[in-house]
Image (cartoon, rainbow, N blue to C red; front, top):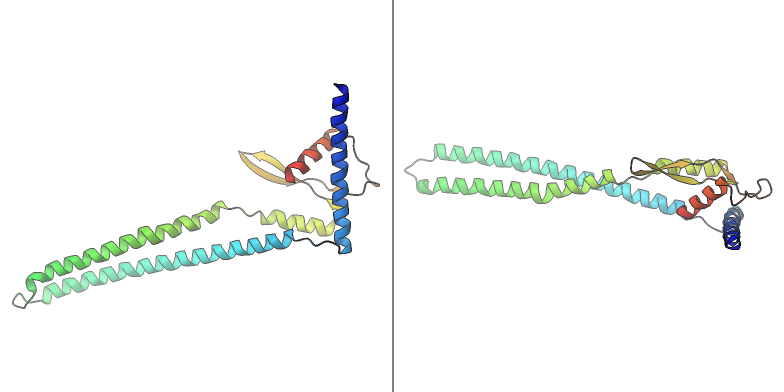
Length: 204
């Protein structure tokens, strides 16, 4: 039983050493130009696409609202024209009996068009643009991490996930030196090593 625990601790220690070595090796290769980081470019492209889609969505929503307002104005104008026609149209003229039905049908057509435009177009766009408020791009955290990487290129910053009111919030831990000479590896049984291992596994 003791041998099993010892073997598990040794495996955990070896895994931690391998991860730290891989991180340090990646940093060295990046400094030497042997590898290229693409995650920042991908994030920037995704963020740009997101904001462009958001801007175009709100623009289309605004244009639809203006169009619906114009349709309502046209409907009111059509009503006034119909009322004026009924006032000036003499009962002796041909078609006087049909005029009332024509005016009523015209008004129904306007109401149907206005209602369908509001239901099928405007409300659809309302639901579409409402989704942008639910999508949270943690751009501030990204900027902070970018600045920290430039200021402390020889260190690794671990992002910790904390439970807050049922949601996941993010904080940045103190810097962890990647050099094993200046900062020896801690014991695998210590709380800091176990915490670091579990956090890096959850991130990776």
